[in-house]
Image 1 (tube, rainbow, N blue to C red):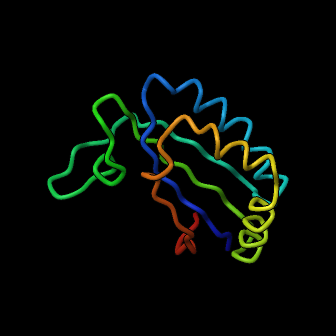
Image 2 (image 1 turned 90 degrees about the horizontal axis):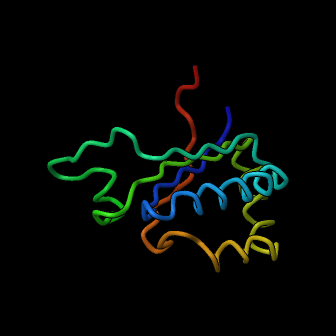
Length: 117
């Protein structure tokens, strides 16, 4: 079964086009490093929760929208190897310097799928 890195970020609505451009430029790099699939999703129907929700998780401001993303890899080992390549690739440093969102509020993690139908 594949391995998945998941991400949730708050992006200023005014930066949507810049985010899409950044994601479109980054996706081929992730694939070059070993990703099978890169998915970026802009919030469309994200309800407010009573105790927590996606917006609270990333401390989204009123002028921000939530982006939910994931990257699929063939295995955890392939993901770990990709992450090592990313850390040493100067093209990735460029992304870190020009993100159209506050990276300090990004939540992310690696996940082993339980069901893949």
